[in-house]
Image 1 (cartoon, one colour):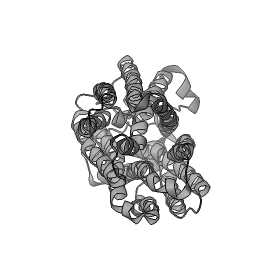
Image 2 (cartoon, rainbow, N blue to C red; image 1 turned 180 degrees about the vertical axis):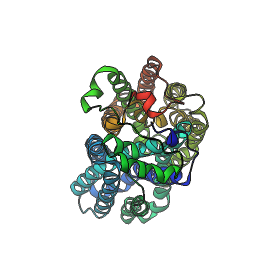
Image 3 (cartoon, one colour; image 1 turned 60 degrees about the horizontal axis):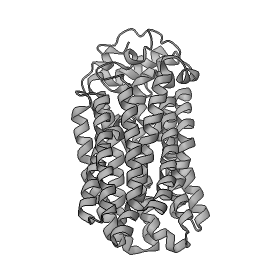
Image 4 (cartoon, helix red, strand yellow; image 1 turned 45 degrees about the vertical axis):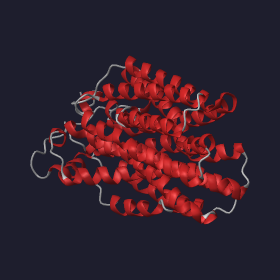
Length: 439
């Protein structure tokens, strides 16, 4: 159906689309991680209780619960590009408001509304990459989108390290920094054409051809047949039901584990090992930077070894590192062994499910519900993140950080079992071939 696009070499427009879409994921990583270091300054300024701090950590995730599914639905209904632009406008507005919040309540509300924009972008960005990407390079380009989250998180920890000496002004600057890349992304996204796959699905064949020409040029444009219509209800029945259950379950587990570590990590380092604010932020930044090794490995492996293989290996690495970390924390082994294990944990999750969580939804569903599936997965995953943060905090309160790590290891083993049970492998196939669209 789109053979000229699927068989294309990587062109400048592919790189541009991938970079601008990944920019949204970078901002997601930055803003979700920055609160974990900023809160160490916010808590004393607003005299926050332990519950207040947990609510603030989870507020943006709660916004993403709604932003993901709403943004995904609107993207499938109204087009990729319009939501692609508007969600970034909302992101900029609420980022500014969080930075100038005068009370804890204001900060909490603005962070929640910011989550709506982040959730919407999370649903849109990988969809646009996937619908333009050549088949043999699709996994690599989607991996770049996944990597951007971790790069954003690393930058947030560095920002926390350098701005923490400014005290109350420091945390406001940490939050405000996000608008700089957001403005650049917003301006450049205006030049991205609408997805030809979405245009065709809406019956706009001529517009689809014009959009296609911006990527593959004047040659190799084939006649495009009409696509078969798939509705929202198909997510929950027939051949797509199994894919929906797989994505929702393994992504729920992934985020329950990884967000507990990401958002509580600086606090763990500060509390268990008596580190200063700067030392905790600096160590968290080092862990996040080294974790990018996992994404680099995925970039080269995903289109060769396949999505299922890297997901299984990633979950296995998470189980092993978290289990050993629980032992080390219980036995008071010291800072360096625990940091090494956290690095290996992050490499594992970034090598596997941390990347494939945004690859699978793009490949297993047809154009008419692709962004909705991504949005649904985002929503369920953020519910998992919230559940993980609150349950981890509860277990740490009763069984210590060692018990909390053991709990996360058990959750990771469930994620591994779910991945083993799901046997579909999308590598090397066109989007239409995988989903059966147009057949």
